[in-house]
Image 1 (cartoon, rainbow over the protein chains, first blue to last red):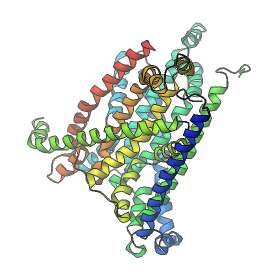
Image 2: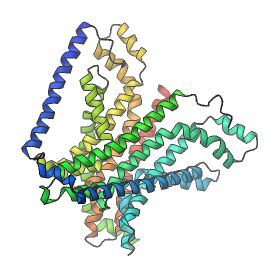
Image 3: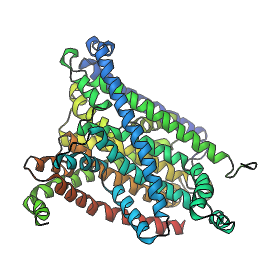
Image 4: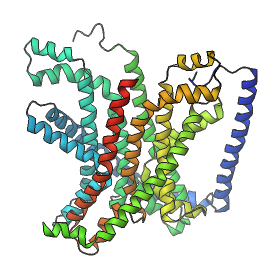
Length: 275
Length: 218
């Protein structure tokens, strides 16, 4: 039950039903309009959809998907490392190192990701050294998402009760040991959903590779969609590509949600956590 | 160093116009997504199942779609459906459609942070629906809505750069434009970065200020 509405009485139930019917009619009307647009502009024509039966079309879409997943996997791994290193630096006792790391993280979080990718792509070109597009994209994604992850990690570690670190110090663990053995294992549990959500964002952002013409899924779908033989099937191709993105990201988001639910239900420290 | 400064002074008009377009794009899309996002948020907490399902469906589809794909659909797909717009309006629609999903989630989460007892007490006092909403629920919800909403707005400002890849001459497009005039990319990109920092740092500072002020009051 939402906070805004009381349990409906007979009048409210009648009104809700009426609103439900009216909104269903409106939404149905809009859906019909979309279908009519599709029919009117010939989006259901056989040629436009038969293209997906051709091996060459399947190959280019699959290679695009492969390129997207490659960039996402590389950038995820590097961003996690980047985040961990900068979190450690931000929690260090050496003042200048801490301030430098904080500055770097704040800077990369504030700059638009596309501009970071432009830096990674065009600046090496200017000095006559062409970085492969994959690595320009991965570098940009790593710097941005690594900085966001560093922020998530830091918040996660700071959320671990202070007594834990104090107890660790009292039994003679070093700061590094405290971080590794005491604080991280507890923090990771709490921040796992946030980490997965950020990796979904990273996966979606690989689509920016399109703008520097890295041949990822979106780039390949434009190539496929621009084929005159199949009557320029942009719309069907984008629908298929969109479904692929939604499927993959939706699955990961669902995983994050499940993790969150599980972590919320279980006690913070299991009773029999002997190991 | 004089050369670095020269990049900005020689092409001042281009930088000015680029950032003016960025701000225009940002303002229109922000207004649009606040209105549409709030409407979607209202749908997601309302007692009518049809509207709730539509809100949930919209958010789940749009949040899991790359913004670049929405742009590409608007620029290359929509004209094939004969509903294509010019580049700038297309960018506004794409940014609004995308950002609304995030605004909706912030609004929904914010309304749900208000304890149910607050509304029950208000109704027990005999307040009407609009009184309960206006005087009891919203004033409390706004405090938990505004800080994350600022994050969404900042993300929108940064996302406007994607329009540069789709023929809108805004700040992100300056570097490609000046590259044709043989200006060094590095200097141009640094100036663009500075421009964005000038826009974003005050917004982030405001967010931190509100967060700190309202965290105490709750």
